[in-house]
Image 1 (cartoon, helix red, strand yellow):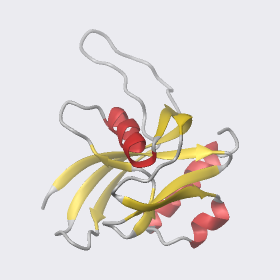
Image 2 (cartoon, helix red, strand yellow; image 1 turned 45 degrees about the vertical axis):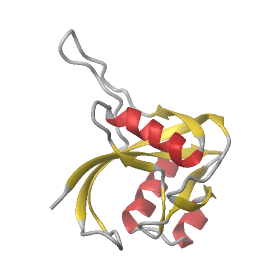
Image 3 (spheres, helix red, strand yellow; image 1 turned 90 degrees about the horizontal axis):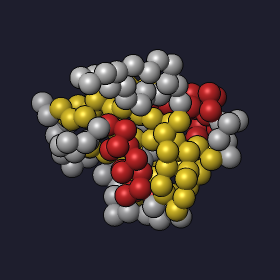
Length: 151
């Protein structure tokens, strides 16, 4: 079974989460994608968000412990790390190890990419009603609970 490391962002603005309609998975998701060779997961989450939404974002969240030396360095801490069996309609099932960060908008304007056919900001009530995966809904709501009033 194919296994991939992916990263994405729960982008929050004015108490709402940015979601896009993913054409391949056929559900509303947060922006994200595969970590490329030589790339750190937080870099991939920021790059994928820019590619899929047109927005420049910065990761926010806990940095409880900063440590490091010449050999080891502290990285941005994901909001959640998930193991997912990805239900693609057109490809065999495969596994994603998904590092999800919380982010805020720095600049840019919304635009759709070729991977999506809808994009928008959704509050808690809307997230409860949209066509998405249960784990995506749970992560979006948890991020709003923790960061929604701050971003």
